[in-house]
Every structure is written in structure tokens, then in C-alpha cells.
Length: 398
Image 1 (cartoon, helix red, strand yellow):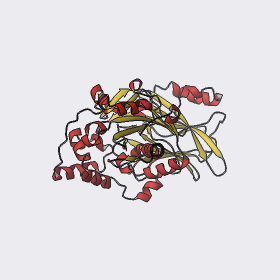
Image 2: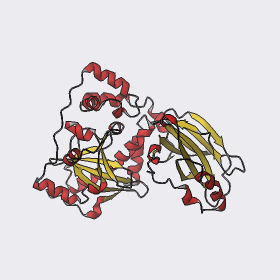
Image 3: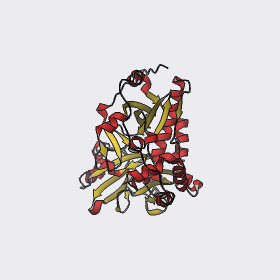
Image 4: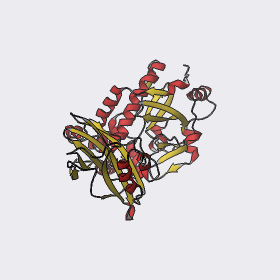
């Protein structure tokens, strides 16, 4: 079998159908914040797998852990086999390529270890996937770059091999080992497993709830992993679907803003200052407000009678004990002086969709804002912008 990649084929187009199907699959996940990870993985699987199967006569297959939304609710990434070679694909929507991060499970659970780890960039705005580099288990393990905060091994992006043809040459010649030795994990006693499953069933980030030796031991056993899937399923799947209107946007992680990492679509306030005198006046105060992070995003509201574009502005301030204070405003887009009447801005609980606070425009409002609220690390919330039956939703986690 000859494995040759033309450099132009590293970029794969994401079809509209794949995006729609992937989002529907993500709605089966109970915790809204985890749906974005499910969404990215489903898109990656449904785009890359058919491409590889077309190239290699269906010799490429998904392997355990089974690639499914319930698994991606727990761990990012999935494994494929190509002949005797195992690949692990790690999708991300980060566009800077400064580093490649691989969850510890893929490195230190013996039955999950792969030969090669592929870095996948998912660009939903341009609707393509880019396989931008790869490395081996041996290199990741030997690097000793390990982040205890999110339990991930990492490499600088510049150290990855970008030519996928080299992957095949290395494998074919077998000149270097691809896998490093991994310590075996113990079996989980039944009573301990039951206790852990009760605890993890509703946890936001279950992979960080237990020490890794316990978590890894639980995850390596198919029966315990399946039971955890079942305990984390939504009680009412129709409710999960109703919490996600059609115009839903990417999940936004506010803690990344503190490191100057911003998701696609969130712009610096200063970049919009020149749009109009009225907007510049409204934004100038926010640009000097003392917030440690501030970003604005254009929101398109497709009402039956007319399409409106408004600006969603978030300002973050740090407080004691690691809390963040969040201030949210809506402003007219450049060229407009007023917001449309009866436009409603609401803060919702991410899990129950309960409206925590809400404000609505009157006939002559040039901005509206929510009362400032505070969040601890890991808090999830949802902002909803509604005009009649048109609804746009943005999900956040601190």
C-alpha cells in the first residue's frame, strides 16, 4: 500500500450537510459547554474519514473508544486505523497553530496509544479542515511537556512535521519507534466504579474530577465507560433540542480571552471605532473602562420583515478568588444610530435555559445592557438576542 498525499489535499471542504448533521448530533449532550467539542469532532470525523477511505479502499476504520458524541463529551479526539497503523486526530478551532495539545488519555491509557497524532484545524467560517501537522507518541511522551491544568501533552506547533508524505516514509521504513512505553493501569473494583460514576454523571468536566490513574483506569474499561455515557445522557432529548435555536454560534471560552486568545468573530473594540461617529462615541468609553478583556461581535438577526445587524459587546474584569465580572451590552452596527424596538437581550442558565435577567429596547434606544454579573471558573451561561420569532444564541464558559 502506497500512502502519498498531495500538499493541496491537506485542506478538505466541510459540506453544509455535515455541519447540520454534526450540530444535531451534538444536541444529545446534556451540558451545553461540551457540545462544541462534540460538534468539532463530528465534523472532523465525517470529513476526514470518507476522504481517507476513498484514498485507501475503505481500509481506514474508526477504533475503540468508539467515535460518538457521548465519548466526545468526555475526551477530545478520535482514533482511526490504517492497516496496522493507528492514527489519533485532535480537532481544534484555534487558528494560531502555536502549539499542539493532546489529552493525556490518548498518551497514557495503554489501549488508546497510537502511532501518529494529527493536528486538525477546523475553520467553520471558511468551511474547511486543514491537517496541518503530525507527531508520534514517542515524541510527545519524550518531550515531557505536560500541562497539569488540563491534563494534556503539548508540543510547539513549529516542531510538528507538516508533510504527510513523511508520515508514510517513516512508517514504511520503520527506522524509528513511534510508541513509547506506557505504565499499565489497574482494574477498577466494582464498588469504587459505582461511586465514581455517581460523581461523574453530572460533572461539567469529568476527566478532571478524579486523579488520572483512577480516571484512566475507569475509561479503559468498555463497560464502565458505557455506563458513564448512559448517566450523562439528557433526561429529555427534546428539551435539549429546544434549547438550541437554529441561529446558534460557536461556544466561547472567556478564560482564553485573559491569555489574548479570541475565537473567530470577536473583534477588538478599537477596530470598529471608525465605523461611524455615533458608534465611535459609544465604544470609546468602553475601550477605556479598565476591563482586562473586551471584545465585540457582529450579530445578524434574521427577522421576518427585515435583517438587522447589532453589536454584542462583552467586558471582563477580574475579581477576588479567581472570579470574573462580566458586563454585556448591545449597540447598533456601524451606520445605524438606534437599535430596533422590542429587541430583547437575556442572560440564561446554560443547563436549564432559565432566564436570569433580561432587558428590552424601546423606540429610541441606542444601547441596552444587562446588570453586571460574576462567574467562577467553569461557570457556563448563555446570552440570547431575540426580535420577535428570530433568536440568536451565544454560549459561554469561564
